[in-house]
Amino acid sequence: MKLSDFDFDLPEALIATRPANPRSSARLLVAEGARMTDSVVSDLTDWLHPGDRLVLNDTRVIPARLSGYRSRTGAEGTTRARIEVTLLEPRASGQWSALVKPLKKVRDGEEIVFSDRLSAQLVAREDGQALLQFDLEGEDFDAALAEAGAMPLPPYIAAKRAADEQDKTDYQTVWAENSGAVAAPTASLHFDQPLLDRLSEIGVQFSYVTLHVGAGTFLPVKVDDVTQHKMHSEWGQVTPEAAAEIAKTKADGGRIIPVGTTALRLIESAARIGTIAPWQGGTDIFIYPGFQFNVADALMTNFHLPKSTLMMLVSALMGQDRIAEIYAHAISNRYRFFSYGDASLLLP
Image (cartoon, rainbow, N blue to C red; front, top):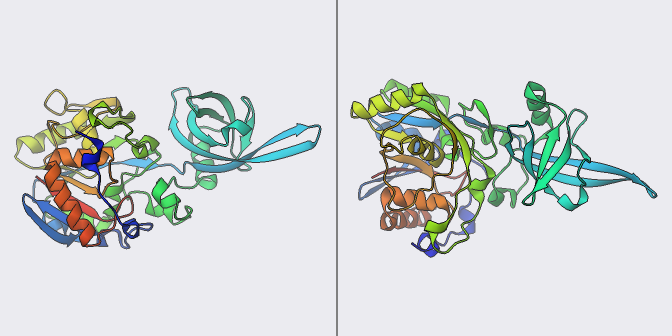
């Protein structure tokens, strides 16, 4: 399988920079077997059945983009340099790995000040990234970060506009609970409480799992033979309760439908033995054509970047030729793409 097998031409105008409002008014392309139907997310009740179970990622996106300065006193007096930081992931030590720009302007041991309440010391650097030790932790850190930070919009949105206060709501799911992601599980952004209530009323069930989406989700594939690509690792958890709910639904003949590729990757990580089981740890599972799905029966997901690992994942579920047809239909019918774009419901 070559990287070019997962390429397509996308008009720039189809890249969404703001989400649909209300959330569930986004368009939904339903691909069921050989059939395609243009719908809207609010009509999910037409496609889901009593006994189906949606698997939802309850990670909470942190406002991981920070702008600060470092001060230095020398013969010329005190000088300042503007420093931009993007948090990547917390370490067990309490430190954070981060992208720091420009890293060469900060020495080891120097402090970067982000606000009156929040600052961090650069304690080490590795592989072009920095390790930062913040002056706060726990709820104090969360509160100060909420004030000083901006949402880490994907590069293709950030290139078009800066993050603003609206993104702190827009780029967060309505059920977000466990802080730690630096990218949103974007298929879940289409759900609002009225839609969840209507799905529940018709007998659709929900299970919550946690996968902290990392910035590596935006890393390009750099090898021509896609099977040689090494996935980034992300921390996830499937609780005993969630595993039992999913297993019971499977046993009862209901469909397991993860909302988003993150939820799908996590439950398949927890089912490598063939059946779902409680699971916790880092996953670097790479799903491409030929993958054996043990849990997921379908997938609700957004439209993904050309030549991305997510294109490979949806091709594994539906088949490469079928995905090519689905994406050609989406482009010709002006569906909006990527994180703030429209959705697809893929029913093999």
